[in-house]
Length: 179
Image 1 (tube, one colour):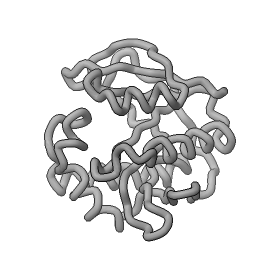
Image 2 (cartoon, rainbow, N blue to C red):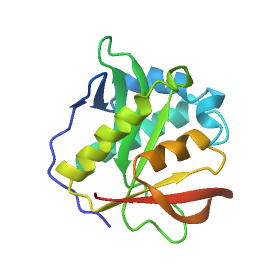
Image 3 (tube, rainbow, N blue to C red):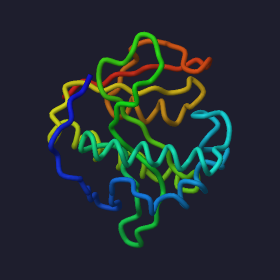
Image 4 (cartoon, one colour):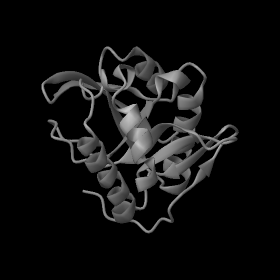
């Protein structure tokens, strides 16, 4: 659906954060992240085994290689500590109807919730989508129980599109048009 693009691997810097394309060096952080109930509960429903984390990470690294964009490791600028992931991607999800545009997603270590980091990182990713990638529209998929992510999506300009089912679970699909 989406052709490969020639975009340089993008590092993004905000007031408090650095966003770097996910790399193999993020593996240990991601293993620690995906076993926290506050992380997996609304996304996968179960902790991820190290093998699953590795395959997911390889998918994300490959996304950068094919498309020139993907998921970033979100790090605190002052100490480069990883705290989450945010990105723009095409995962070819098994959902009906299929997404007709790129998707955004985010996940953050619960120790860093409520401090505005997810909002800051998503705003940076959306600026990249608007100004660098010139994407006219994006979607995101959120569990109805994930109130924090729903609030963030709405704050970031997403609007409800439809209810759906993904892997047997109810999800909300929201969309955001280029402002």
